[in-house]
Amino acid sequence: TQLLEQSPQFLSIQEGENLTVYCNSSSVFSSLQWYRQEPGEGPVLLVTVVTGGEVKKLKRLTFQFGDARKDSSLHITAAQPGDTGLYLCAGVDPMNRDDKIIFGKGTRLHILP
Amino acid sequence: DTGVSQNPRHKITKRGQNVTFRCDPISEHNRLYWYRQTLGQGPEFLTYFQNEAQLEKSRLLSDRFSAERPKGSFSTLEIQRTEQGDSAMYLCASSRSRDEQYFGPGTRLTVT
Image 1: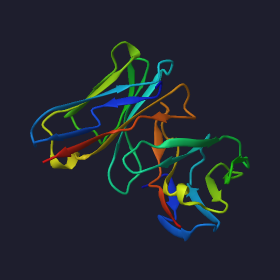
Image 2 (image 1 turned 45 degrees about the vertical axis):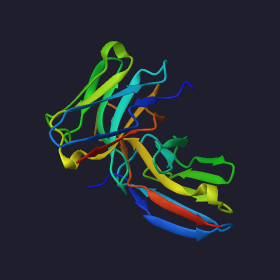
Image 3 (image 1 turned 180 degrees about the horizontal axis):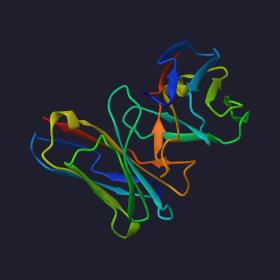
Image 4 (image 1 turned 180 degrees about the vertical axis):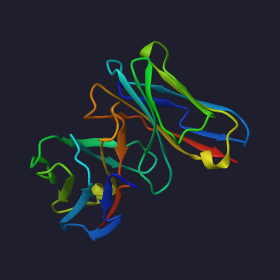
């Protein structure tokens, strides 16, 4: 069973469009992290959301943590080809006492020029 | 460059051989994680160190896998008697807290 479910699995849209991807769980997380990964490279941390209901902005990217801290979303405004990549959410496994980090399977985003 | 480094970047080995990967974390980071990632999947947790102590080891890891972090600095991941199913990207990350991780570029292992 995947503790962190990401949707959609794949998304291909035209440059300039807006999009939202989701990270959902039935468990409460103390925080959630978002990463972007390009082929052949390690993931790069974009943001960590900590407080329920928190909204963080990173240029055209807006991250939100659900009020109940069970879900998070990433909204991209006016997508650009440079946004192409695998978007991963991650958090400390709430079933584990030793800060084990778990990841979702990711959303693979492709922005068409 | 003061980021996380991993060596080698690529490794091709024959089934049954042993391989060892190295990870050099960001110098002030006390936490170090190893993950495995296959195509189309997110990283799967393998093991985690806080300083030199190995705090967690995934049930995914068989007895053929072992990791060390002597003196709480660099870490090595060894796979003995490699199998084709071990082919994957092996990622290392380091951090100061549980709310962030900084990844290296990974070691891509191909077992033929």
